[in-house]
Amino acid sequence: MKYVKVICLLLCLLGYSRGYGQQFYRITGKLFIKDAGHDQNKSIVAGKFYYDLNHKKLIYDFTFPRKEKIVCIDTLNYKFVEGVYTGREFAITVPESSLFHLALLGSMADFGLKDSFYSISDVSKEGDLIISTWVPPLEAANGFGKVVVSQKNKRLHGVAIFDYKGKLLNKQIVKGYHKVQGLDFPSEILYIYYVDGKESYRAISFRDVLVNDYGEENMYNYPLPK
Amino acid sequence: MKRLLLFCMLMVLCSVSSRAGIASLFDVDEAAISTSFEDLNMLESFLAEHENATMEDVALHQGVLFNKLNLNMSSALEGIDSILNRPPLGINSFIWGLCLNWVGVVVVYVSATDADATYRRRETTRALIGCGVNAIALGGCTILSIFVPALSIGLW
Figure 1 (cartoon, rainbow over the protein chains, first blue to last red):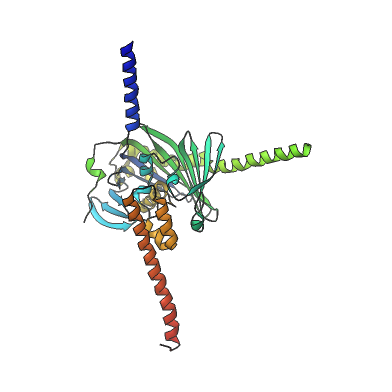
Figure 2 (figure 1 turned 120 degrees about the horizontal axis):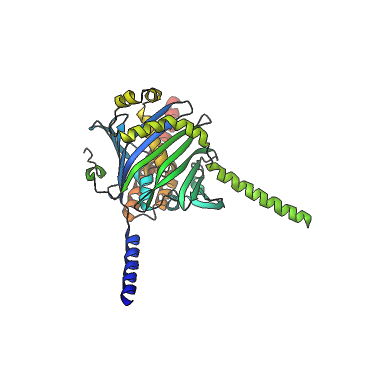
């Protein structure tokens, strides 16, 4: 009986240390971006993505409609078409603000707003949704509007972004989640935006998501031209 | 008493309706969306099964769907940025400083307080550079606004 207790205690400690020690540092998978504009214009892009917290490089390896790699680092996007470097472009956004970064750090549930200059102004519960409204500081209120975030089962469900005049700019709905080694990662995100007051849709879906994977090691730190 | 009860009921109703307004933000027209993506979902399945499929392969096997496609890749890349980043927050620090001047520097510094010191220093420096560029541009415009009229009326 004494041994059983000792074994139980050891198992509990092991379980605790494993759960506590789980660190996610890299993620990869297939992605498909589908665009269905209100004008019946449709497009699809397919490829893979790679992101590692240590390298802070976000790599898109597209295979369709053409072979193209885009390496996003800092504020630059490096492009390689058919394996040949074709140039770099200035980027407004940085990989550290991407979904991949937030997911690995476990900050996706609040869209990363908790660690931003936004502050929470209202929280309400309706049905199975917890809805929080985030507002920018007064100094930035002339440039940025509120952001409304909904959570379902403690996971991000939707985000609605408004401009500073209160007009809805776009909304994003997470349609489902993959559970990969304990990490919640979206299986599909629906993005609804407005062109001339009409709704257009864009969907991005993720398949075969892997975390902390050792395969394709060279892709996570894709070499860049000097 | 009746009036008080009526008032309370109205308040509760108003509160419920305003909450419903917020939640309805996340309502979507599932039927319209499903119809919009019907053929694209079929193409996605094809591309998932044929990882290295080229445009020729798709045209050959999914000809009808292929003809409906707009193969302008740059538009889809815009899509990545819009979906996968936090638009109001992922803006780089240089732009913050450039557009909002010292306010942008403060915003960058405050928003990076939870980050490590190197990151905070790097981002704040970028915002300061943006702020400096803003100041130089503003100064240049001010000087021009003085010199150009002075030249035109022959004071210089």
